[in-house]
Structure formats: C-alpha cells, structure tokens
Amino acid sequence: MNEPTPGTMRAMVLEEPGGGLVLRQRQVPVPGPRQVLLKVLACGVCRTDLHVVDGELPDIPYPVIPGHEVVGRVVACGEGVALETGARMGVPWLGWTCGECFYCRNGQENLCDQARFTGYTLDGGYAEYLLADARYCFRIPDGYDDPHAAPLLCAGLIGYRCLRMAGEGRRIGLYGFGAAAHVLAQVLRWQGREVYAFTRPGDVEAQDFARALGAVWAGGSDRLPGEPLDAAILFAPVGALVPAALRAVRKAGVVVCGGIHMSDIPRFPYRILWEERVVRSVANLTRRDGVEFLELAPRAGVTTRVEIFPLSEANTALARLRSGRLTGAAVLVP
Ligand SMILES: [Zn+2]
Ligand SMILES: [Zn+2]
Image (cartoon, rainbow, N blue to C red; front, side, top):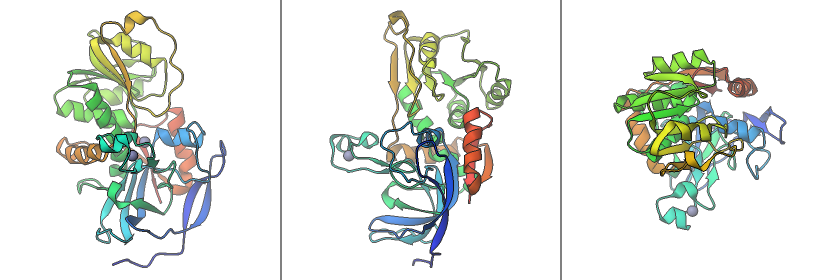
C-alpha cells in the first residue's frame, strides 16, 4: 500500500561548484522499478559532503542534493519492491551497481565500474524525501532513534570496512577523532583492542572525548605513542598524516586511508615503508559491510553523539564540520 504524498518537497541543492547549498522546492519523485520513496527522518553530514560541495570530486552532476547517511520511512514502493509502508530504512553511499563488471562479480561491488553514489551521482538525503534502490537499503536496528542511527550509515560503516582492512592487530591508531573514529573506538574497545587517538595538535577537547570513549592513549598527530602500533586508520583528509602514521606502525603494520579525498602526501624516505609496512585506501562499501556492521553495532553497544541541525541549516552544519568544531556527528532533521 502506498500512502498519498505531497507534490513538492524542500531540498538543499548544490547548483554549481563552490556555490554552497540553496533551499529549493522540488517535485517529490515517483519510484520506478526496484525503487522505494522514503520520507527523510534524519540525514547525517559527512566529510565527503564537504568534498562534493567544494567540487573536489570528479564529474559532479549539477544540480545535486547531497547526503548519504539517510534514515527514512517507506512511503511508496515501485514495481518489484516488497517493503512495508512505514518501515525504517537506511540509505548509504553505495546507491547502485551494475552487477556485471569484474568487481561486481568478484565480491568488490564497492569498486563497480559504473557504481552510483547517494548524494553525489544520485540525489541524496538533504531533502524531505528521496528515492533509493531498495536493494541497497538497510534495515535500521530498533535500538537507535533516527538522528542517532544516521551516522552509522557512513561514519560507522566506512570505519568498519577500514577496520577490516587494518587486520586483527591489538593496538590501533585512529587519526582524526570525528564521527567515524568515535564509532569505531567503541567497536575496538568491545573487541578488547587498544585505541590510540591522534587529533590536531592541541585539540584537548577531542583528546578528552577519545579517552571518554575508552582510548588508552590520546595526543596530537605530531606525537608517537610509547609502543609501535599494529595498524593505523586515517580519517582526517591530510596527506601529511600518511608518513606520520607509517612512523607509528610496527614492521608489517598497515596504514589505511579511509577518506575519499586527501591533500597530497608529502615525499617521505623509503625506510619508513620498508619492512613490509603497507599503505592502502578504502573506497566506498559493500552491502555485506553494511549488513555486518548494523548487526554488530547494537551488540557492541555502540552509541553515537550527534548535533542536530534543521535541514535549512545544512550550510551551517557543513561549516562546523569544516572547522573541526563538532564533537561527534552533525545530523540534519527536516
Ligand atoms: Zn559493476
Ligand atoms: Zn560519508
């Protein structure tokens, strides 16, 4: 059963490079085959949204609505979708894949040659409604209200994929202690591992936040903890952190870059990579990551800290994220 929907909706739209978001009235879209129309209940603000707004990602199809940490309620279903009206679903970054390319056929749909991404090459959740391909949506665990569930859908999920790539080591460094790190730190602690939190030098508030979430060590990214790390995960988009993290990991240690965009990595001596240290990136997510993480998060007792902004204040939320003046994650609520 589909419920009647209003004809228009409010959306925060990116119309040109560097222009910021503008509030527009849009037609509420109609779901096609395999699509679901969701009423947006909450949408997280991710660093990737900043890279979209700043035009740092290639081939942005202006105008576009950002937002890929979407919690929504099913309003209408297209052909072939059997979701019940009112069900609470999450829409992540990975919005569509071809199912046919080498990567799709080999368990790496996150690298699909033709992948489409929510809030980048597909309209996202900075709006009152959005369309999503139902096959890429996740059920939201019951224990989370809408705003607190939103950051799980990218910050949580990408962090989880980064952790998978970081391996089974005990001492894990997290560079940049924002939305993703604050979720991952709780998972690590639940797994009995040690969190080493690296922040901007002098950011005592973020270091205290990390310790409150169980970090055994917190300090500036210009420092080294007493013991070498088994792995480091970089959430801050700062290329200079790559050699810094390489210096902090042990032989055969892994440095995982979790962001979609990063400033240039400065040149560094080969000896800090020598001894089988690894630098790698993590791109996007697979549906398997999402299912696994959303099953694990409630068991691990993961909670999120959020700051709520009205939809029309999306530019303010982005500015706060840019300046580092957020503790936890920003979430837009229409
Ligand atoms: Zn593909
Ligand atoms: Zn994201």
